[in-house]
Structure formats: C-alpha cells, structure tokens
Image: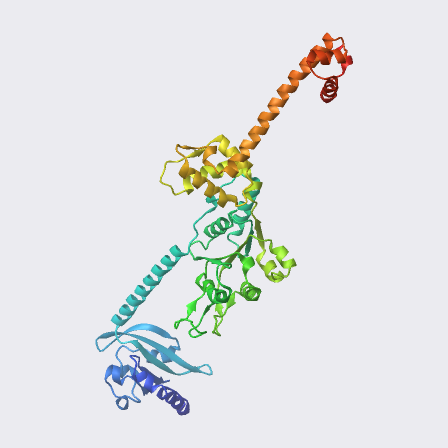
Amino acid sequence: MNEFEIEELRQGINSMKDILDNAYQGIVLVDSDGKIAKWNYEQLLGIREEDVLGKPVDEVIENTRLHIVVKTGQKELYDIQRIQGHDMIASRTPIIKNGKVIGAVGTILFKDIKEVKELASKIKTLEDTVNIYKKELGRMYCANYTFDDIITRNPKMLELKNIALKAANSSSTILIEGESGTGKEYFAHAIHYASIRKNAPFIRINCAAIPHELLESELFGYESGAFTGAKKEGKIGKLELANGGTVLLDEISSLPFSMQAKLLRVLEEREFERIGGNESIKIDIKVIACTNEDLNKLVEQNKFRQDLYYRLNVVEIKIPPLRERNDDIELLCEDILNKQLDTGFNSKKASEKTILALKLYDWPGNVRELRNVLERAANISTGNMITLQDLPDYISEKLMFNEDEGENKYLKESVAKTEIKAIMAALKEAKGNRTDAAKILGIHRTALYKKLAGYGIDIKNIM
C-alpha cells in the first residue's frame, strides 16, 4: 500500500479519536497486505496500539476476516464474531481507490450480542407503544357513519351515494353542498369509512367555530416560542394530525380570505410549515369540504377565492333539501324512531296521518329538524303510536287545514247535486216557466237565473 495513502487514513481516524474512545465501537485499519496500520481497540480488547502495529491482523484478532476482505474486496456487514469469549457484532469494509483495494476497515458495533437483543426489545416496546397510541388516536378521530346510515329511496339521493362511493378511494377533493341539516356530515363520514384510509384519522375542522386569529395555528400548528402565549413544546396542527387520513373542512365558506391562499397551497403542494418554523412538512391527506352556502355565488361576490373554489370542487355533491325528497320521510321516520333515538321507551311508529302531516310540512331545518320533532313526539306520546296530537301545532295544522278543505269540497259538491236536482224538478213542474219555477223553489227569480247560469243548466234540454 502507498505509505502516503495509509497516512491519510490514519489521520482521518485520529480526528475521530474522541468519538471512538467514548463509544463501544472500535476501529482497526489494515493495509493491502492485511497488516494493522491503525488500532483503536485498546478499551474494548485491552491491547495497546504500539504492540500490534505492522502485525498481520489475523494474528491479533481471533476469528477475524479482514485479511480475507482485503483480497475479495467484498463488504461483510453485521457479522457475529467470537472475540475473548463474547459474540460481538462486527462489520468489515474494503477501502477501494481507483478500482484497487488498498486496505480495509473493521468495526465492532456491539461488544456482545446480548446488547443487540436488549436494543431489539426496547425497539419492540417502543413500536408497541406507538401502535397503541395510533389505535387510540384512530378511536378518537374516526368516522361515525357509513353509507348504510344514509337512509333514502329518493333517486337523486341514491345517485349521490353512488358518486360519493366511487370518489371515496380517489385522491380528489370533494365539495359537499346543502342546506343546514341535510346530512352533509353523514356523507363526509361515510366517504372516509368507505376509503382505504378508514383506519387512519378522520379530523373534523369547523371553520366557523374557530376564532379567525386561532385558525392558522389550529390548521398548521406552531413551533416552540412562535408567538406570545405559545406552548413551550409547540403544537401539532390538525393537518399534520390527519396525515394518512381525511380532513373535513366544515363551513368552508367561513374561512378568512387570508387563510384561503394558504389552504390552496397545501392542497396543491401537499406540504406546509408550522408557524415559526422553516421546515416543510409533507402530508398525505384526503380533503372533504362542506358548506351550506353557494360557493359559486360567493366567488362572484369576491368573498371566496375562485382558484380555491375550483380546487375544492373536483367532485361535487349537492344534497337536496328534505322538502324535495319527501318520498324519504316515511323511511326516515322508521329509521329515526327504531334505531337513531337513544330513548328509554319501547319502539314507536308514526301513524298514517302523522306521516301525511310530516310530508305536508316544508322542513326548513331538514332531516335534523325531523329528528328533533320525532324525538319530542316520542317523549310526549302515551302509546306506541305517534299521532297528530303528538306533533307541534305548526306541523299538525297543515293536515287539519287540508282535511277541512277536503270536507268543505265534499259538502259543496253534495249541495250542488241536490240543488240541480231540485231546480230541474221545479222547471219540469212549471213547464219551463222560470218565474213559476222560482216560486216553487221559494227563491227570487234573479237567484234562479244565477243558479241556472252557474250550473250550466239549459232549459231546452229539460223540456
């Protein structure tokens, strides 16, 4: 071996002396002839460097293969080597320059294999602990509803369920629009549950409920000392917490304009920085946004960024209000009364008239209002059947008004038939004389004329 080259290697190892002297690891450097050129095993093996320099390595270290590695030029990593009665973990690496092996380095990574087993045990314990926390996190942030919980027979709703199911396993963002209480969150939960991310966190962020000045730190988190009042240890943001899972941005229309640009960057680049940090954090999340406002109109009014709207509105799901799907009311009533109400009484049913009254109501609060009405009715009803009397007046009176209108109509029809029959009989008796017919009927002649015109009675057809 070139003496200059070996001296360079010696100097390199000497520069690491403090590190090597305070670690289990030791290093031995051999030249191309397998002779020891540098020795750093004094603490580990109790042999001084001056006693071994220039000696063949296989005469100094038992069971070594460094002299073989010099010849083969092949690495031997993490090998068990018996030295002084201990099974040590050793690695041997050839030193190659200009395609030629000029030496080799041997290192002891663990002075006894028992240390490896202890380390493996600690790692296993840490992994188990992390898995436990992951499971707990999954239970805390999980989807509560599936597509089976979206009860419908309405063709439009069935179509939306099919679209949502197909979009569940794509990486595309989903925009769910609909009035308050229509079931937007049910769709969001179901989408996450139906996806391959279902065992990962499902993080819900209500953009309207979080004060604007705190929204950025909630989404992105912050580093220690990022601002006055920040936690000393910093904070993980909701987006980072959701990594690998799904983020539901509820009431997205309430997102401040300044935050919309930052969210757009996250959606496009899938990375962000914590407040006060300078390290980019990569995330893999599915984003679902919900709103009860028309985002397109907000864009036209310059209240919502157009580029963010297009980025969110990849898959659009517009949930119809309950008044446009009253064919679902009977199914919803059955489901709410039998399964969804956590009540302390026996299962109850809604009567036919109750169902009819519920269908006649407009439901400004949609399914949420229906659930509240049925819960109230279930609590005040005395039997197993919910009747009109158990409904709020503003709902039950809808049916009563329609029934009264129907009864009046029936009465008017009966009266009309009786009057026509009496008029025709009187005209026949009076031989078509309308004045005499009016006297027979006991009414004024003018009144008879009006009735004849109103009923479309032609005297010629009678005589």
